[in-house]
Image (cartoon, rainbow over all chains, first blue to last red):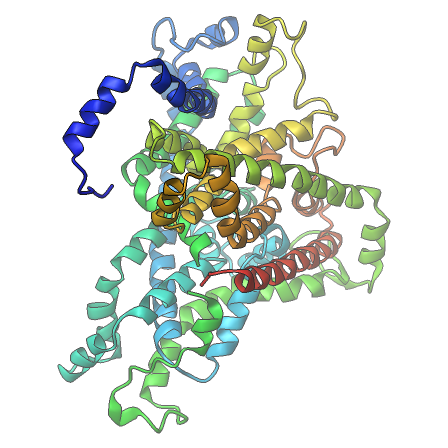
Length: 299
Length: 321
């Protein structure tokens, strides 16, 4: 909000006085109706998560007996230890963390490097590389999954976390490359020239000068890749068929309800364990999430 | 920043001495390709090769990743085309699209216009609430939703029973007439925030001065909406609709975890069909599944082309860079 040069104090005082006059209430009525409607909507949007947290703290029988009650009679933390140990959500969490961390690092490095040369350099074959990237921007996982499994098998990486990491960081992420390319292209060329005069080579110009400048893009790419990898399902599902110990949270969850369809509170506890990290991250870095996604429509 | 600009860009930042001999494969070119190598190799292996290989696989009979492939020509295609369940998946995908896209695009626009107004109380709180499901894991949400819509003890049915709307729990996901629409509802709920953010970003491109000028001229809020907001949003409407359309093709995670494609294939979208034949069958039919995948790929390609044309038109139509 910008501050205008109006006599603010007197007008706001007048407004405050007017607030409860019938005309003013009538004028504000549409906004209160809108607030009420959006309030109900927002409650509906958050409710499944509240229900989930509540069910995760209830006694397994209580979930059935009083399903609508959001506050449990007494918090049963044992559900969490059951999900963590017996249902192996602890292990799934670790697998997911490992896969996500490696994928994010690989994607950032690979996409920044490609984006740098595509955005800032001219070379023979650039149009072909760009063309192929753009043409495959929206390829769905279901289309490529069979050859991806086949090639991973041939490389001997099927049924390993490495295989999942490589497949997840290898496919897609064209948007990240384009994001870096656009950003690097907009930087003034004096930056590089100064570094070159100082005797920096191609490699150190990139890592010492350009990469630190691209921190805003790196933040966005990290966040979006983190979200995509944490939430990935199809690929980890297919890659860990014969290795239950390598399941990620999303795959483990499906397996868990397949085996224990009556343990609602265990299911809910597992869901909370799976979602808490990403939701916390969102709460702290909300602005970046929103900006990263809004960028898609602006570009 | 558009892709076309990027391809055209002539930004050379090489030192002056290197200019002029750009055609020669110099040391800089070695560096350039060294920087591209990770992308070329990984992207090549995991995206480009699979696209090409799918075509080859679709011409073979192949029952498992370790089994031998035998050339069968067009037989897989004939079989896929003759399978009513395959066409059923397209029908479901299109039904899903036709209902979800307009509902989502219009409802998010309405909420975005409200949230964009400075007079609206609790704006950021509402935005956070609507965006929250977007960041959560689709597969986990899908599993939780199975329970939320449970016919006996799920909270949705408990509420309906308590309010006296129904006499006995509705089997939302177990009934082939309601399963798809339940997933449509959950999908809209899950991805509402993303379209909302698109609209908010679009609305922010409209300068405040326009609204102020309209207010001074005494325009009513309906006038402002009709004469200023909607016309200026037109190019964005095309893009947002297309992005939403494209995202409805990716519903594997939610469908598999909520319904698994059932009951009686009533929610089986193409990706689940491929998954079923390639991974969930006792004897995998990888060639057959590849043929289905190729047809699906062509369909997506068609949607993508449609998208490109749409974006071109949107760019022509307006102040859009």
